[in-house]
Length: 178
Image (cartoon, rainbow, N blue to C red):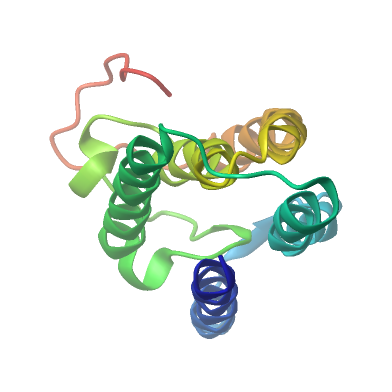
């Protein structure tokens, strides 16, 4: 478990550093930021997640069950989706809601099929990671908190992106899942 939490923490720190670099570049190119009000809540939720996982395992004695390998596979699939989303956005990926005026939306990688693949990956991660260790309370609490926060975040993004032009050749059609 210690190795898993260390990997998770290192991953989040690396993402925040990557996001900071991209955010500075995007703002220098004229990007507009939305959603500053909910951003600290999102950061806190992600920072508390590994702590809650450890607390449930240590203090409440949560233990991996027979389905732990399945949950690991689900978590790994979520990681692959999240990494694909980050790569598809390239320098436009950030943990903040930033919109470059006049620049079309990204429609490559998982964004061909999903409107919010990164968010889907995080929802799955908040469920699967704790379940690997039998920490169902953490899975439930953080999944519900994340879904509530995503309700705010997705509406914020939709408002921010309302003026973004369609991608070249894009025919607006419903996207599955998100």
